[in-house]
Image 1 (spheres, rainbow, N blue to C red):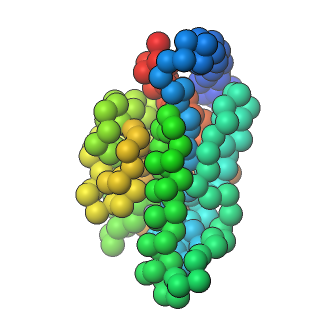
Image 2 (tube, rainbow, N blue to C red):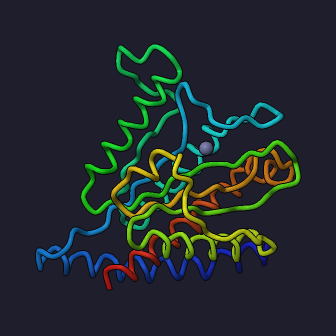
Image 3 (cartoon, helix red, strand yellow):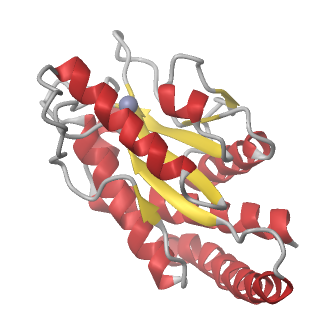
Amino acid sequence: MANRIKWWFPLAAAAVLAAAALAGRQADLAAEGAAQPPVLVIDAGHGGADGGAVAADGTLESEINLDIALRLEALARFWGLDPVMTRREESIGYPAGADTIAKKKVADQHARLALINGTPGAVLVSIHQNNYPAAAPRGIQVFYNASPGADAFAALAQENLTACLLPENRRVAAPADPGVFLMKRTACPAILAECGFLSNPGDLAKLRTPEYRTQLAVVLLGSYLQYIRGTIA
Ligand SMILES: [Zn+2]
C-alpha cells in the first residue's frame, strides 16, 4: 500500500502544478489573442469493424485502447481540460457505401483525420497495443509524427512511462511508420503509444487490469501537461 501511495503522489502533485500553470497561461493567451491554446485529442485506436490485434485469450486491442482512452478523458476533465475524443464507444457508424471491412476502416480513418485536423490547437495522443508473432517481445514504446514538437512530446512520454511503469524497459521513442495513416496525415503534434504487447503474457495480464490502465492514463496525462507547459510557457 505504501508503494502505491508513493507512486501516485509525485505525479498528482506535478499534475496539479502543471494544470494550474496551464490554466493561467491559457487565460493569458486568450486575453492576448495569441496562438491557439492546445487541445488534447484522444484517439482510441481501432474500433467498430476493426478490432485491431487479438490476444490469445480473445482480448481485443480496440477494447483495451478505448478503456484507457476513457480513463485518460476522465482524468483530463478532472484537471479542467476539455479533450476531444475520436470515439467513445466500441461501435462505429459508417457511411452507406462502406460495405466491406476495408472500406469501413478507410471511412473511419478519414473521419478521425477530419476531426483532428479540424480541431485548432490539437495535440493528438493515439492509444494502441502492440502484437508480435513470438511471445517474448514486451514493453511500452511511443511513436511520433513529423510535426514540430511531436518528437519531444514522445520522448517525454516514453521517459515517464518507462520510469513510472516499466523501469526495465529499453525501448525508446521513434518516428511512426509512414504506413500509419493518422500519424502520416495529421497536421498537429501527434504521438502514438503502444502500451504493451498483447502477444506477451506478462504485458497482457497487466493490460487486463483496470489499475494498470489507470496508471497508463495518469502517466500519459502527466506527460501531456508537462509537454504543454513547455510549449506555451
Ligand atoms: Zn493498433
